[in-house]
Image 1: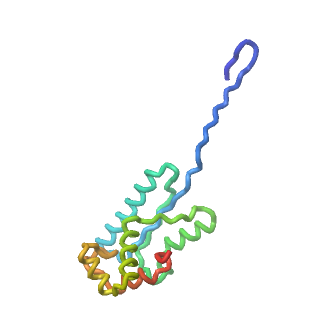
Image 2 (image 1 turned 90 degrees about the horizontal axis):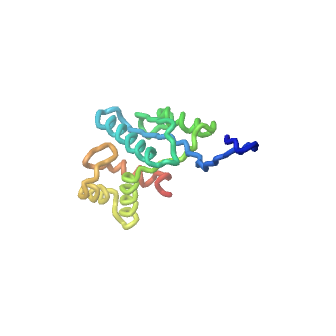
Length: 154
């Protein structure tokens, strides 16, 4: 507040500060082996970096499960995250891991170009792409699961 002569002048400053999206991380591995635990840490660290460098986002919580993907009932943190979203506690936006997305795109591209699952496994090995579990060789089941997962189909 400034006083000039006998008049009072009030200076009001207005800043447009965009609302920051509240972002939660969800990461999962299927076993509790050391390599999988390292993979879980790597997933979380990579996603935290993405959030840190996006100034319109704020990291509010990390959810993680060490559970098989075959049964959603064993994925307690995932269920909690979904419930939090429905309760209005989270935005519910998914963050796509671009490195993994490229591998999924490659698998679909190969499949749509007539490659068999076995041929896809060979091509991934030729390119030195490890499986989600960190193995040099992909299992037939892993490829089939990706090809049949509606989240990946777009």
